Length: 432
Image (cartoon, rainbow, N blue to C red; front, side):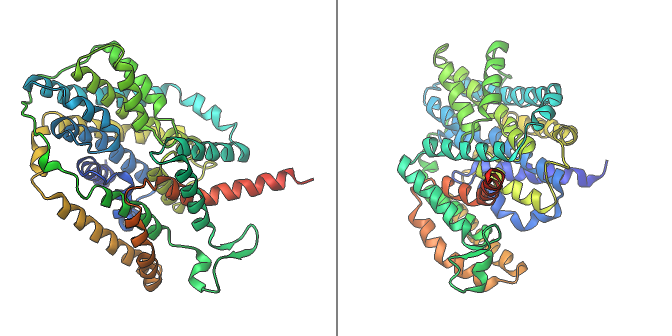
């Protein structure tokens, strides 16, 4: 086996560690940070890298949630809520080891289920059509309107804004220039990298600028013995995670919240509640990729970036079948989940050392890196000045939106081409 095979795994693990440890720096932001370097990967390597990152971020995110009461990533909020109820060293130790084990069981079970039902997923693809694609995209948008943590009206405005920014430029379907004002660079529209950096990464990171990690309670714990939740609870939370990962816009957040809510009916033990929620969100970390690989529909913003990068490498549903991608992807996930289990349990004592760093300095460094990503992508596209002008215009807007979840805006911006293409084809099919 070529050593290059492990490169996307290592990159994914490294990105997942950062995503899970730093509040506000999720998978979406990390994809933007490494955008210039992802061109060396092929379609399968991109998938392995992304799946590895998503899995590790779930594993590692549970540790700061349990130990500090701060969510390393958004699906760990149930663990944050219950962390204050962990009153003994043994409870903290059990919560950490139980979450690591449950996460591994949940993830690997979902991979196994995909192998069992892979024939049926191929049958589902036979129903794929333009009408179904448009319906799914509109469904994802509707779910976002009512679930993203803004006012419903604000979410509608954000989606319309994202679609509006997306259609700026020359539209080949209508053969018309939209809001270009005769500016040559605008014929190609706003640079996707700059829009994502300024209108998602900047507000997301600025929102967590004052996160008080140093003021949080650092619970004492030992590695101890491995805590294993009862099989019925593990199975139930895995099932919730599998189906929860398919909920557009929420995925792992919905998984952990739904499993946690169910656990409230059956137990008062904070350890069990934490383990159940963490098992579910790791199960959903893989199932959320299924709509992307079967229908070509991303459920969250980071998946939309992944799809964009894969399409640049020639990915399309007609040539790449899920059953062909699954073996290599599954093997990679087995390896990554083993690494995640080791990091999230026996090596978890190393995690608190990271929080000795000043988070404002860390976030400032990452923001500077994003600025240089803008310069680099502008340079390779022979439009450095244009990219910097766009950055200067959009970055202040991003700062002003720091208390708004801008995911609906950037998601609408990312999928506008597919939506417009689908609507245009439907119109043509229905014209007498």
